[in-house]
Image (tube, rainbow over all chains, first blue to last red; front, side):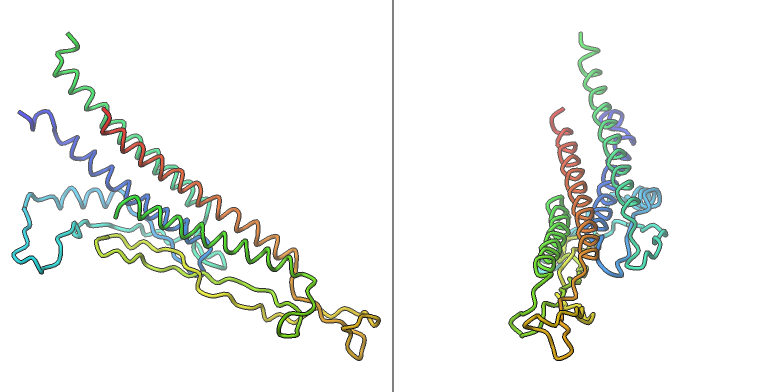
Amino acid sequence: MAEGIFNRVFNILEKMIGVSRIRHSYIVSNIANLETPRYRPKDVDFKQTLIGILQDQKDIDLRRTDPVHFKLSNSSVPIRLSEDKGKWNGYNWINIDKEISRLIENNLNYRIYVDTLLKKITLIKEVIKEGGR
Amino acid sequence: MNYMDLLKVINSGMYAQRKRIDLIATNLANMETLKTEKGMPYRRKMMIMKSEPMDDFDSILSLEMVKIDEIVEDKTPFKRVYQPSHPYADKDGYVLKPNVDPIVEITNLMISRTAYEANVTAFKITKEMILKALEMGSK
C-alpha cells in the first residue's frame, strides 16, 4: 500500500522543489552578472516547466549499452524559460530590484514546498504511530 | 548541477566586483599623479566584464559566470590646469593632470558596492536553501 501513502502529492512536491531550485540558479546567475555589459537575464517559467516535467514523466529505465557512451544525465528536463527579457537600461537588461525580489519570492516558495513535504511526512508518521498511542 | 557550482557562480560575481572596487581605489589614489612610467600623467583605468558559460558537461542549465575580460584605459583627454610656475608646465603654462573624475569614481564605487551586496544576499539565500533541504533529512 505504499502507493497509497506516498501519493501524487509527494511526487508533485518533489518536482516543485526541483524546479524551484533550478529557478534559483538562474536568478543567482543573473545577480552575478549584474555589471556585465549586454547581458540578458534568464528566468524559468515555473508553471510551464512543472507541467512539462510532470507530463514528461515516464518510468522507462535508460541503460547504456556500451561503457564508452556518454553518461546518461537527466538532460531531458524540459526547462522553459520565461518570455520576459527585461528592459534595456543603457548597459544591459538586468533590473536589480526585480532580481532580488524574484530571489526572495522563489526562496519563500521553496520553503513552503519543503515545509509542506515535511508536514506530509509528519502526518504519515502520526498515522504509523496510530495517533501517538 | 549542484549547489556548490551555484556558489561558484556567486563567487565569480563577488570577485569581479571586488576587483572593480580595487581598480576604483587605484584611480582615486592616483588622482594627482602627474608622472607614470610612460612619462605621462596617470590615465584612468576601467574594467570590462563578460559572462562565460559554466564548463559543466553534466549540467542542463545554461548558467553564466562572470569573468574579467580586460582592463582598458580611459581615452578621455587629460585635464589642463594653468599653473605657469609648476615645473611640469608646458610653454603655455599648462600642466596636464590625470583624467580621473572623483564623482564618476565614487558613483561607480557605490554601484559596485550595491552589486556586491546583491551577491552576498544571493549567497545567504542559497545557504538558507541548502540548510532547508537538509531539514528534510532530519525529520
